[in-house]
Image (cartoon, rainbow, N blue to C red; front, top):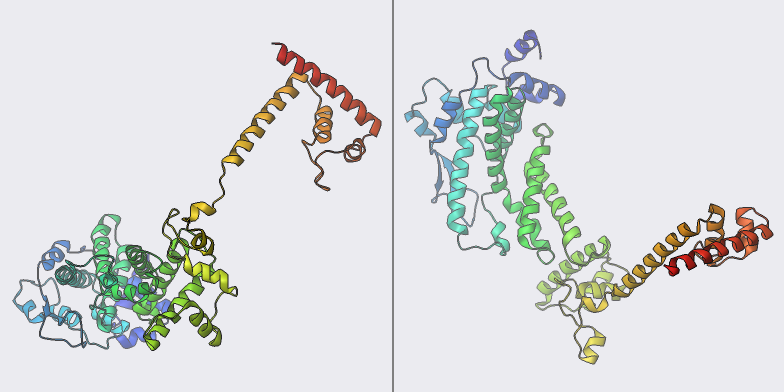
Length: 449
């Protein structure tokens, strides 16, 4: 815990964007930690719940500031309505209006200064923002998506992409809430954590269009619902890693995580047949060139035409053309019994599927079972014959139960066994003869019962 003198040093400084910009990254994090401590009088959760009831964000159908959209209109705050609400002296109304009516070109430092190092203002404003955005997005998406299915790639399309100002306010508010949560008693973290999850939901919805822009490249490899789940996981992963002090745009940062998540899923589960990564990457490049040539020529190019174009333009593909041709041909197989054609099956007129090319393991299992039974019988025979360790070793090496790993010979001569065990050859012969007599006696006893 930091002493009061250091805390006073920070609180006496006016938190302005210029001051925040002047601080090194490490000192900025320290300042944030000191300013967003749990207040001695506590946080007013009841007031935050009351604020959630106010519907101040509206979807204006007559305005379209961002240009052509699927949803004609923009989101606008009715901040004048705040003056008519019974907010008492719990919150600085003018400061709350500043947060809601932020400038388009706002920076992370400007966004942080708007919260004025006030935990209650932070909690109230982010509760109001998260609840209103969730309400509007749910209403509008519900009206549009009621007749859409997840197998339509446009299911992932959303024209409510982050504006620069929205991005800065949401990500800054989320960062400060995480700081406040870490400095609050455990019993008080529940509300802040739930608010953070609500903010994450809005951020996910506002960035869902990023998933579509990348997932559509792989819709021939993996079902679209899986692509969406992996892309959404990439956005949530980006949220846990994002640092507002770096100054990057969240959409750029999230796009990298979306790409990693989707690429990994495609490489792992794109097909029942696991193919090398260079083959998968080659198929992706090849499909892009096919689409490009189709747009230019107005018809689907053949495999050879696309291959020739790739070679001329130094587009990296697997070296073996026929292997790659087969990989492209069987790329869409979805089950082991799905029929496909090749030269042989076309000539004979017979059906052909993956099962025809998978070796049956039944014969191997029968051989394994017989070997196991023989080994069990041999162990019993050795036990009944009461052989010594030398006798067991000589018998097993002489009759191929222990092969010579240097020469791969199964059965070994007395001379070879003598060299390995460093025992005279005539002694090996004596041990072998004695062991055979014991084994013959044991066999007689077993079958005489």
